[in-house]
Image (spheres, one colour):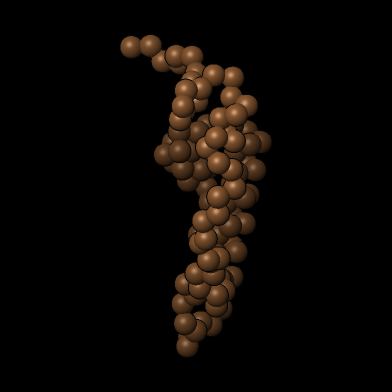
Length: 96
């Protein structure tokens, strides 16, 4: 398949883009390179090759989820400019 000016215009219309002059030729060249690369991939013999779902054989490698208290509520409120017994107090941000 060869990319023509009409094909570029159609794709540009669908993507709500505009290409003129040198930019259009550059896009046409890039699209032709992509098509030729896909054609090279189509030539590869894939008979007997299982589809690749994951890039590695490792699956769900996660650390153990352990909770650790790093700061108490009192320590967090100690340096607050304004607070009540349990919460930070801030000035009103949104007005109704």
